[in-house]
Amino acid sequence: MPLGRESILIAIGAACCLGVSFQLLLAWLQQLEQPLRGRRSIWSALCGLSIAKQSQAVNGVAGLIGNTPLVRIQSLSELTGCEILAKAEMLNPGGSVKDRVALQVVQEALAEGRLRPGGLITEGTAGSTGVSLAVVAAAAGCRCSIVMPDDAAIEKSQLLSALGAKVERVRPVSITHPGHFVNVARKDAAMEPGTAVFADQFENQANFRAHLKTGEEIWRQTGGRLDAFVSGAGTGGTIAGVSHALKARDPSIQVMLIDPPGSSLFNKVKRGVLYTRHEAEGKRLKNPFDTITEGVGINRITANFSCAKIDDAFQGTDREAVEMAQYLLRNDGLFVGSSAAMNCVGAVKGARMLGSGHTIVTVLCDGGHRHLSKFHNQEYLAQCGLTPEHEGRELTFVL
Image (cartoon, rainbow, N blue to C red):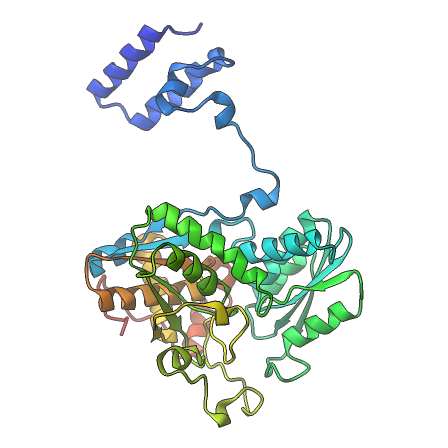
């Protein structure tokens, strides 16, 4: 039998006096609301929401992408004296920040008539973009083919196969080589003219456009109160889109790059020179990347990265990233992937440079579950001489 307005108000007062959990109280009020469905109730009035508003649903997988929470990383914030905030991109349905890019690429291709249901979308990727494309392509009724380097974590290709994508692993070579995973994916699309689209995440500026929205979300979630944004770059889409969106709102916001070992972007930002002549891609005798950090770092300027507005840059090491990943798990319960860990290293370095009292935002690109065979595998880390050593709460491992 429904309770009257007076009875509910008395219950609220009694609960407050007795110290009853407010969450339990809200749950109880929701139950009371059931007989009142169809008209505004006390619960709805308190929350300023109608029953219909509470039950709104998003439209398919696309509706789940983006608008991720901005989480305060408590340990890093307390120890740096800054507010360290991070976009929890692992909460996208495909598990990473790349869902945003995949959605933008597929939506634009469909809108322009370059892709139709039943068509094929191909991409060369170290893994996360492939997973996102497989999810979005399936929702759009399209096929997906992914080419990836064979040194990428095996669980990424296993996940792609489980999602229904065709997967091809190739040896890591220079982008100038026809066997580079990006070039193979481009060739695969060319074999189905009129029905296949090469996503081209490195050069397709749909990537950049997707992250204009990420930047707007950050601005809204912080209420415009932030001093810096820190991120690594692979395709360059994230740092380019976010930097444009934030600086359009407030040009004083500092945008900082964190670059892993083997990448040349730090030199480009700090010195204006990407590489020396003998370091150019295609002239190296081996894979230029001597790092276990996947998804960030590159030795060329992509069309997306060329749009970035970057003020400063830091270099990060594999040791710092590994220790940071373990630190976040131990102190904050955050299980992050390698590029997310590197971003947090950059956030700490940015906090030290700016000094206490500032707000710094970064991105948790994906979760650690995609890195179990390498970055979060103790045997593999031992082989690389990267067994985690730091056990304290201080951030002494960030140099």
